Image 1 (cartoon, helix red, strand yellow):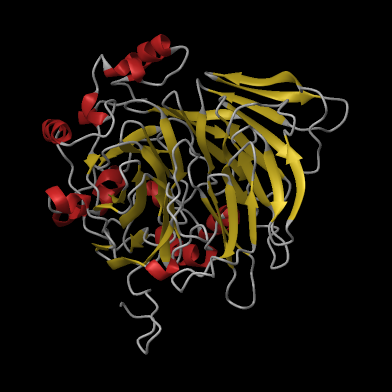
Image 2 (cartoon, helix red, strand yellow):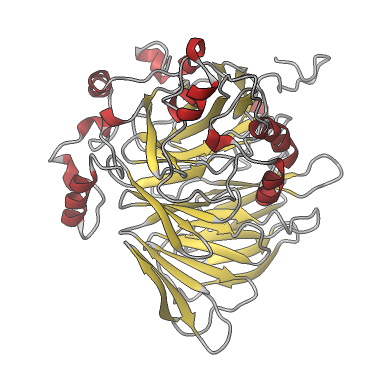
Amino acid sequence: MAAEGGGKEMNEIKTQFTTREGVYKLLTHSEYSRPNRVPFNSQGSNPVKVSFVNVNDQSGNGDRICFNVGRELYFYIYKGVRKAADLSKPIDKRIYKGTQPTCHDFNPLTATAESVSLLVGFSAGQVQLIDPIKKETSKLFNEERLIDKSRVTCVRWVPGSESLFLVAHSSGSMYLYNVENTCGTTAPHYQLLKQGENYAVHTCKSKSARNPLLRWTVGEGALNEFAFSPDGKFLACASQDGFLRVFGFDAAELHGTMKSYFGGLLCVCWSPDGRYIVAGGEDDLVTVWSFLDCRVIARGHGHKSWVSVVAFDHCTTSVEDGDLPAEFSGSDEDFHEQNHFSAGRDRANSSHSRLSKRNSTDSRPVSVTYRFGSVGQDTQLCLWDLTEDILFPHLPLSRTRTHTNVMSATSPPATGQPPSTLTPNSNTGSSNSSSSTTFATLSLHDSRKERHEKDHKRNHSMGHISSKSSDKLNQLSSSKMAKADAAKTLGTTLCPRMEEVPLLEPLVCKKIAHERLTVLIFLEDCLVTACQEGFVCTWARPGKVVSDGPHENTLL
């Protein structure tokens, strides 16, 4: 089901793939890149990243795209499944000297057709606030590098705020900024605010308001990526020490942790309802973690090298009518209140009414499918389905389903009281839920055998976990301590052994680029990928290909 064919076929770049929804097609006419379309020589450069924003333009061309390639930053109108904008005429283009852009993020709250607020992080540690529509640079933060001298790894606006943003660095620190404040002319002095296991939060001591407002130090080594929960109240951090740490953002309280099977964690994302977190990294795996239970519930093995991006597909996450396990119940009133931060509110409401209205006469459990995707340094795109037999492993089979069984077969209680703010808003694009056979769970013996048969591009990938290769684990100054800690966590709830949790196979696993993949974003009509050569590709969802002929909106 994963890869098809062998030998030469395995190295062919795929331009389409099929799932239960239909055929996804690469749209060559919708590709974005540098104007000359020449593949970028990516040696030693920072990953290509892509950001989107909708400016609510009345013309119907409201989407804008920003991407970085080497020292360059581009800003275009994004036309989705239609022909790309004229690449020779970017709305804005910037070339930087002495430093490279590493990441960026638009503020969706302030975006208009006349103005957008774009944050750009750089390899030397600075953060720039620019308006690519007005072609203005309004502010530069950490300009003198007095706050942090290391590379910016991730930058995000705080959900619901027009002025607060969070910046992570390869030093392992995160800083909270306010766009209205200056950074001062001297290095900041800090005062401890809160401390916990392997993290600390400090406030900035100053007589007048200045940046940063807060400094978080998290784990050992680089903080590679963070992601806010859909309601903006929790923060998931993926670190080079292999730990996923999830915090209550305002209170700076540690909610739960997870350890990778091997090596550092590179990427993290939340399910649309905030119930599950997926992380990927140097163990070549995707790991699914339950927010409510604070435990690993599944791992996915399909990549042959490091996993660079994970993302949920809110349009293909589906819920089918039926009686629900208790943890899915809730009132519509609660849902409207909790869904304040969520996008796609209208679509979410219809699916949630099914989630919340229990039918005592129909005892059939709900059918739930979460779709997520991953891309990696192996140039492969993988799609995964997380279904109810993994989420609720003790639910009875259909022929023996009864109301009593459903109620008694709910997941184990959470280690802490689940927050009332995270009832599901499962954004539903299609109610066609896949059957549980869309993936297979492999036994430990089979998965080990399969892993050893596969070629790994790195000697410290999944198939080569040995005492020799473990010397290269995290490249931390405290590597001996890291190895000792890893040995202690294996087999615990932080890091279950491979045979202790289900192992998912990908629904789709296709080589789609020549260079390592660095972007995966799911949009309404398409999904977007990008590779280190600087090509941003649009893949039309089934039935969304637009042709110039009479068969518009039909598959070509």
